[in-house]
Length: 216
Image 1: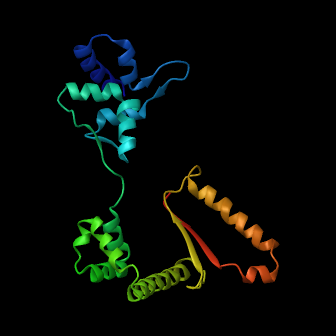
Image 2 (image 1 turned 90 degrees about the horizontal axis):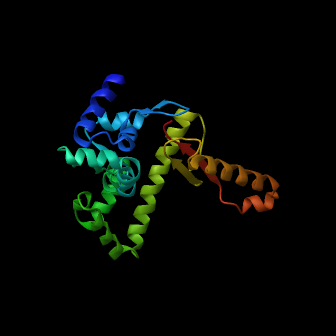
Image 3 (image 1 turned 180 degrees about the vertical axis):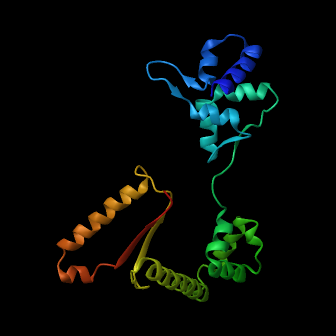
């Protein structure tokens, strides 16, 4: 830590002088009553590129979190060190890899698979929105996917589901402060409401299977 911080701040001081208000923000060490290592500053210094996970986040990174670093690298030969890089997979690639049946159906109705390179081409499906044939085929793809998921759940979780159920699925990174917690509260709320219902009222309720998944 010391050597990295020493060399980097000496480079800054050689160019910008002893501007301690700026240097203190670029140091790896946070001084004060609670001294800490600034892991974010270390990541910036040690990384080839720095990006947010969306355009608005990338701008916050540059303007609010690291404006001194942005200026430093811009003035010292690396103006593109801070950039935007969307964190995720494109919808067209996701559909093609995760739902090949739907991908094939879209290609069939559009007349080609060119939409895999230009997602906006899927707007061509609007020309067939009222087609009963397309709606039937779409439902068949969905039903086949649900049957495939039912088999997977039974094999891996030991739970038997019915494809006629409404599948309420949420998959994202698992953190206690993210939406899974709200979803769990909602599931508990629905369960308690069902417990209070009469058998006749329950018969009118859509059966629902709630599934949560994600990486910790």
